[in-house]
Length: 502
Ligand code: AMP
Image (tube, rainbow, N blue to C red; front, side, top):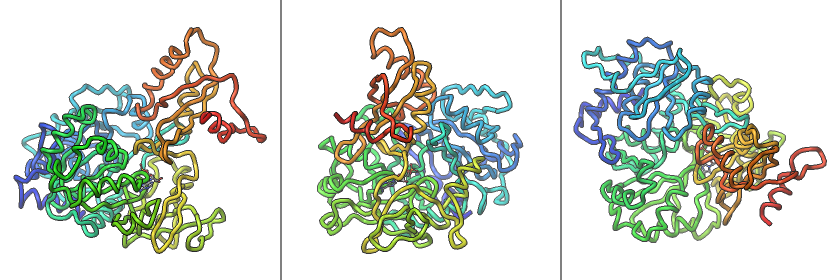
């Protein structure tokens, strides 16, 4: 695979160049490759089933990328799992992926109940008398490179399989079509369990760049975050618009803080005009790109540079044009292409579209199919094309984005409804200026002995904390004797939304 060969070559030609920095931890290209080789050789000694996935648990440690590269060079896909993911969810991921090997990169001990799963510490894999693995064992072509788990409406997360070819198509587009090539310094905001992290990780490693990774501790302490920004001297910024908006609240977030920042790459949610205007004002040297795509099509497939003309012309920004090897098709409810300017479901057709969800045939068949001989994905996003540019017009189902995180309202409802204190529950997103500000849940409670509602809320939240990541737990809880029902017996979300807004 070209990407892995590039990293190997960089380790030989620029071994002392920094590959990855996170607060006080760093790794250089030479050491990264050597440790990856040691890890790969130890993985092969453990002799896991060919092509079986390896779960890699940790946060922003440099050894996370060592473990990623170790897995793929040993011929195994990896599943990145951030330390913010609760144990029950990890158990579900292990069950659904049939993972038998877990590499713990974090310093915390990791206990997996299933005794057939082997948990090894990443340091244990650094075998010093190792036999280098050959290119023959690397993950290649249609074999899976990584699996990222996203929220699923059935209550279980779905594992999106991204192959070596999918990832290569994405990385080629990034380094060829964006001004990010040539050993630049990249900022990484997203934890590795989200595919936004792939937007900087592999383009940076493919082009000899350095990744500066933000940790959750930094995000919790803005003072430290800004000190780290300063030290990073970032040139390429990758984040969700929500994260940039948070940074913009601080007036010192400007070109003086990051004098060499030349590119902003955004993906994952609507990029508001107001954010671009502020960024253009504060970072006059930087170009801004809006990109669009789901995890299922490898991070992003369309892009547009948000130039002044675009900002002046549109109140809602376009998401741009498809990358050269990809086609965007808009279909109506009868699966017929719509005409220019008309709204339809966005279908992505091209080489970066995943083969499907791991072990989930039914869900895969619903979302993926072959269009004119090429792999295609039904995004569930609505859009239209005007002047050759794609515009995003929201979701067609209950999938939402909150502060950049993708989630299914039905998955949250499923877990709330499982609580012993809950008869039924409906989760409603609360908007502010066309953006979701927080989630509110309306609950019909079971009989309980709590005197006050906040105690009941506390008890339900505690249960939820064990199964859902914190960002999926609604902020506001309210209790009702009944919830409105439509004439055909379904929960009446429209009426509920109106009720919540009162
Ligand atoms: P994820 O799989 O987390 O990347 O989420 C993918 C979804 O995020 C897409 O299907 C869209 O609904 C939304 N999304 C991604 N990029 C954009 C964008 N630039 N503008 C609006 N929505 C976006």
